[in-house]
Length: 281
Image 1 (cartoon, rainbow, N blue to C red):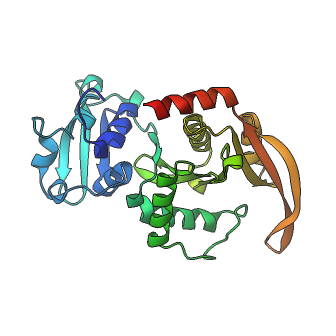
Image 2 (cartoon, helix red, strand yellow):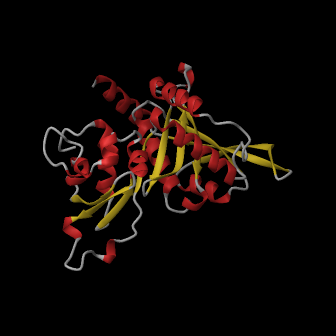
């Protein structure tokens, strides 16, 4: 960042860096989903919090540095921004309206409630995941503990996909503590039904590969239903190879179904080199 922006607001700056709309409105709950933390009380109550543009405050650089300024604020509801370089005399440029903004970031323990709710929703929508609708309890406390353990381990991580301020997908990358298997990690991917077909899965998988490159992980593996054709085609397109079939391994709608083991091999020497350079720093 060009300014010493608080770490808390870096995801918000990344969000605005991808924004193209002349006018952008975010509910305050959406801002919290983007940053993964609660806003201060003053951000819910006072327009002056959003309109600050002077030190010692620095959070406003999240939008100011990307050409936006606050246009309107409604306490406890929303804040809207306008982009100076795209506004014309009529108040906007329709060519930039309704563009999706996708942010992929690491899940924090403060995201636990949102991630648990999201996983529960996606499991209720899909016939291709291990757990079905309302089949298991996903508590905020358990999810928080899991996220903390992953982030501390160095070999596992969870990513959140945030589309236009809403959580729509996740990717869990689960590594291995055993030294002989420390180069591999298993993937668990979930995308909301109404958010599929927008490139979200590809973006999550790309983020996982970038993370793997800094953690000496050279094998990413997953399991996919043989009837989930869109997912299989996507995995094959980006380099995942089928390694075998687990026959009659899952039952959905009273029908036995097969699953396919798939894996992608990353550049071993390159990832080890990148990982070592990060450790030196």
